[in-house]
Length: 241
Image: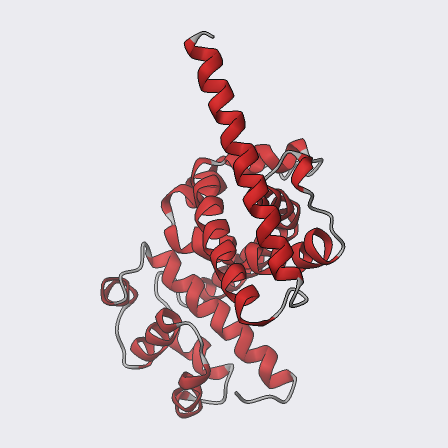
């Protein structure tokens, strides 16, 4: 056996051993109906793995090639690829949302409906990443829509007060600064919460960028815009945190 053959045989054996171990794991999880503390731990580990891998795919742009091979050609612009390579927060957000959407689909199709099989050639982790690749296109389209809305909002603000952030734009959407302060506790993201509080205190975007360790001023503007959008939706729905 040549060295190449030996390495190939070892790789095949490792893959087989991994799939056999996965089969035993799935059998144990099925005994509790894919629920309970053991499944929660399994799902958490799977999510951590998935987010880590997807962040890497986003950084390199490989995810777009992967989904294009599945019939979802998102045709990313060069500026979009640059933003993904430079903005760690954006990669984290897209990866987390994609994995969150993929987990219940994976549980139902791969585990409950037995879509994953140990003789199918893929480990559980590989199968899950394949499932996640099918969820990514919709999540990225949602991101694009949000970005377009944000850019339109920015253009509108800049036409009123060019080259500066209009603090009143935050306050007007939620009936004044006092209401914003009262609602800070309902903002789940710590970085967005800090950005809103610092904005109300009169800090500039550059200062906020340094204080919350954001990658760019655009990242701060994006945080505030996403929060304002959610706050407005809550108001329209009659919910106040």
